[in-house]
Length: 446
Ligand SMILES: [Fe+2]
Ligand SMILES: [Zn+2]
Image (cartoon, rainbow, N blue to C red; front, side, top):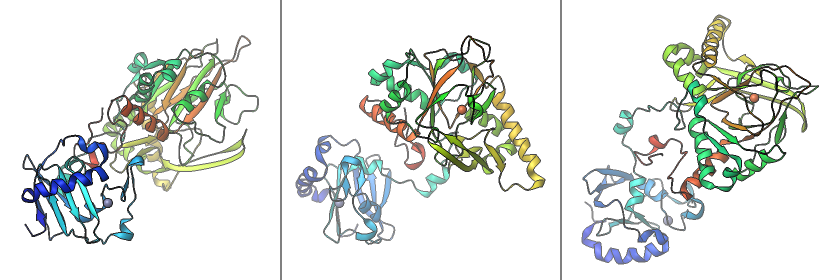
C-alpha cells in the first residue's frame, strides 16, 4: 500500500467528511444501509487501478479513468435524467491518478481526491454494480441466449394460449397495461378484446402507451379492399407470412391490427408464426441455410402514392438479423417487397434460394404456424421483428366486407413504457438489453 491509501485507520475522520459529502452528492438514497461492504482497498497494476476486496474476499479492479468517468457528484452526473455531465476527454487526463483514496470505516463508501481538487464519493453498492469482468471471465462466458430479448418461444399450440386483455382495462389499469406490454415482449403477441367498433381507438391506445409511428401510409391505415390497390394488402388475395415494412431503415417494431368488420364468407383468417422459434429449428437442422440467411443482405424496395404523397423506399438487411453476440434480433421475411439477394454470385444463387425455401417451408409448417380469424372488436398486436403474419384469401360477397385498422409503435416507445411501469409497479427492471453480458449477474430480468 502506498501513502495515499487509507482504509479503516482514517475511518472516523473520514466518516465525518463523508457525511457532509453524502448530503451534497448522494441525496436521500445515502440513508439506506449498504448491501455490499468493502473490506480493503489497494493500488494495483502499475498504479493504474484500484483493487477493492469485498467481505467475502472476492475482489474487483477499477481503473482510475473509469472511476473518474463514473463520478456521481452533481457536477459530473445529472441524476434526474441519468446522464453524464462531465466531459472526460476535455477535462480529465487519460492517465489520471488520485492524490488520495479513503474507505470509510464501515466499508460502505469510497472517497477519492483528484489532482484538480475534484472529489468523488462512491457507495459500495454502486461500485459493486459497476464492477468490471476480467478477461478470463469474459473468455469463459458463453452467450446461450437465442434472442436479444428475453423471450418465450412457441409453436402452433400457442393458438389456445394467446394472452388477452380487455381494451378498457389496458387504458384504466396499469397492471393490465404492464401485462399487455410484457406479453408482447415475451411472446411477441397479445390479443386486445372488447373494443367498440369505432374510429380513433387504435390511436388512443398508441397514445396511451406513448405515440404511434408515422409511415408513408399515414398514422393509421385502413386495410380493406380498395378499387385501386397500391398493395396486395388491399385486395382479397392470400397474403403469405411476412414482416411489415422491411424497406425502412428503422423498421417499425410493433403492429396493431384492429378488426372492425370480418368477412362472413370463408377465409380472411390471419396466419401467425414465431419466426425466432423457426430460426432456431433451422439453425439446428440446416446450419448452412441459417448461415447464409443471417449473413446475406436482401434488398427490399417499394414505391407508390398514398395519402401523404409519393414515396420511394428501400433498405437492405439479412433475412435473419443477428445482434453482435449472434442472437436473433429481427426476422425480415417479406416476399412482396424482396428484390435481390445482394453480393451473391451466379454460382451460389441456387444455394441461396435453397436456404430461403428451407426457412420458408418451416415457417409454414402446421406445427409452427396457426390461423386466427379475428372477430369484430378484437385487435391482434404483435412484434413485427419476430412474429410473421399473413392472411388467408377470401371471396368478396354482397353480405359484408372485411375491414381492419392498422398502426405501428416503435419498440423504443413500448420498451420505455414497460420499463417505467415495471419500476412503478415493483416488477423490477424489465426489457433490458444485454442484461447478462455487460455486468456479471447485475440484473435478474423477471
Ligand atoms: Fe402486413
Ligand atoms: Zn464529480
